[in-house]
Amino acid sequence: MRYLVVIERGDTSVGAYVPDLPGWAVVGETEEEALRLAREAVELHIEALKEQGMSVPQARFHAEVVG
Image 1 (cartoon, rainbow, N blue to C red):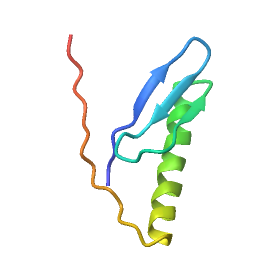
Image 2 (tube, one colour):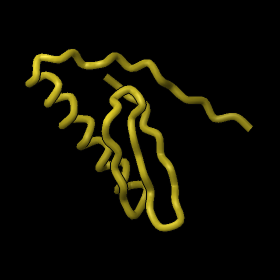
Image 3 (cartoon, helix red, strand yellow):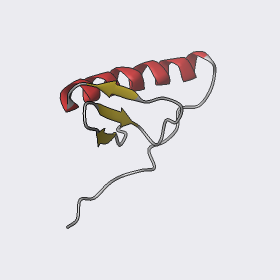
Image 4 (cartoon, rainbow, N blue to C red):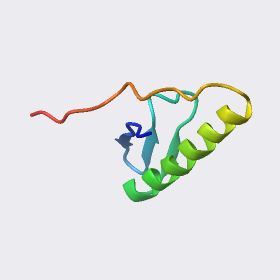
């Protein structure tokens, strides 16, 4: 399954989260680090949901760039 990762660039760090998988966020020094951490967090989050017998949310969010 593919999930949208939202990247938020701050003055000194980069945050990332997945709207379809609420409850966590990651912060890195670069966008690449934040994306790597987000991938790891998605895998761990899904693994934990499965271990707890919970369903894995379907991807509902997507993004388009306009402007």
